[in-house]
Image (cartoon, rainbow, N blue to C red):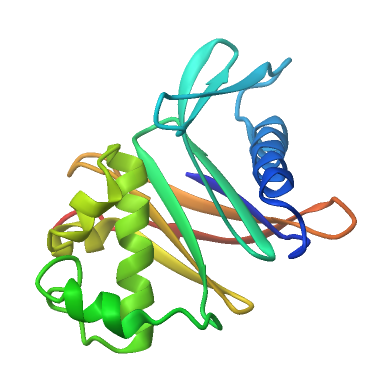
Length: 196
């Protein structure tokens, strides 16, 4: 999985943020696509609004996420993926959600604010990777999906990257930041653990 992110204007309109996130995905693919030669990138939408990425007329797994001040995009040629980002400095009342879903996606977590946001971003990422409605994902325990999730703390943001991996597929995560000068900076590379 290849992930690109950038800090973004937190006063931008929802439409501007959506367009910037799509543009980020296109820039990411054009910069880090592994095949040499021209790269033709298109992004369409499913009826539910999920992005459909095509590179040189071949479908490629992708995921997009944004919060005020932060945008992220990811692609993978191996398996379904989902990413989600949350601002940890939010004033969101997580206790009410936590209490309602304590037997769902929060099963087995310590129910602290940090644990809540790790599970919340995982639930959103799993929903994106699986195509299931978020409310359905929130109602089920996510203990089985934990092994395929990796978390990145980027300033005040938490980014969850999830891959729907099988025992025979282990993938790396390459993380790049597009800086204020529109230059890509390599951040880290992490191997997702295969199921035990």
